[in-house]
Image (cartoon, rainbow, N blue to C red):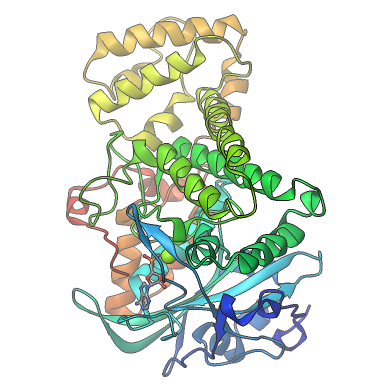
Length: 489
Ligand code: AMP
Ligand code: MG
């Protein structure tokens, strides 16, 4: 088991031209304390339980210790924010420590979020608040456990340093991991500056390292764009299927690897409403739940535009045209799985869409309902009362249930088998805002981090019944209506 000293660094990004980043050291955090550390993420770096409890590891999390072999830097990028192009963004508070090759020969890039000002901070303070780091930490690991591509979270260091948002809060640093933190905006910055040679170097780097199957091919750039487009479409289909709302789908928050990236004012769908807007700062509802699939395509179009110096426009359009099919196919297969349908048949899309319309009509809790749907019994009688009681319009539910029962019968679905399958795709536990809020308040008020660890463990097994945690599966209590999440982080 390597210690921090034996991590093998291979900093490919730092070998790219200086225009891609600025080198700098993280700003130390005064008197840091450990908030939480994730064993599963630590295992990606082959770090053992003793090492991640050490003082040195805490100092790594805090940005107070730069490990041997690291070459810290802030990445340069641009991006479309709420539809408007912003030519200069960049890591204003994130610092890439370096890239590690683990014992499985996987590449993991270590990034501190909230590690102090950088040349890209503009007028902001370079810090992150404890509240937002807890949310990102828990949600990254929760998404991973749901089987959704995401950046990972290794741990959080907190400190008493005050950070001013709407109210004074305390500072914290999150250490996150991803094979790459390159964003769509990383390409857009060079396109906007007409620095086409840098654009090419970035594309070559990303293809060689992360899409090696296309490297050296005559149409490598087009294949790369196609694959990013398809990955993005499939990612968003997965978000829709669990009711995940990202909240800030700006192109600087879109991962070139199709990972869920930059958790801010995200939320999981509760009372089902296709127009749900999770981000309080999103007045126009640009990033509402039902818009996410379209925004995904719009964002891919911005990436395609940035790649036009490398790929001719017609081929860009061919690549973008793959989005819809990839999305629809992935979404249909996710919905089929949610309904426990083993085979694909005509009419499945309508069956799923009509169910969603029923949920919307009643504002039924999305996660609770789909989890409960596994109890559906195809034998006629009162056996489906649990589900029926979640709807006010009983006749409408009965009509849908009759169609569903017939559809299940058409593939001779066996209740028990279907139940087991459905419970592996419809989670019992998701990171509801109020669950995160309880953990945040305990951490802020009492420096008690036990609820964070409890939630982490719970969400690492989202599909398992955990009877001792039944209450964590319930829809939000009344007080949770007051929770507002915004871009402030
Ligand atoms: P986000 O909305 O978190 O994705 O951030 C958008 C841009 O603002 C990125 O360039 C961030 O680095 C930058 N940013 C956000 N918060 C801060 C902060 N507190 N200090 C410096 N830069 C920040
Ligand atoms: Mg961001």
